[in-house]
Image: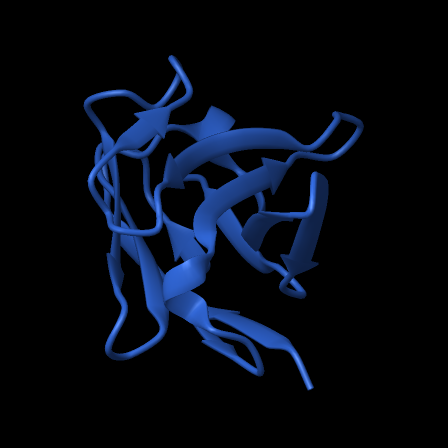
Length: 120
């Protein structure tokens, strides 16, 4: 059974930091690109950060560049999102995503999400 379990969300003041974790099971983690998305109330889900299978390349939304860092540990089947200098506009539910293209078709797995609230 495929599972992605996020943790690490919570309430933090502006300028603070949080580290999200996502532990994967039920599939070969190292074969999948890993991504973090977020969805704020009334807004569409957006890609925040992505990481290739080998962790060789990462990409970020312009709004988080220089503040967020995605990393992965293939031995622990875990992907992280280090979030620094948090702003109120970072408030959202953050979702972990695993993606691979198999025979020309995209396969996506999603976690249940973890709430991040940035407020004073």
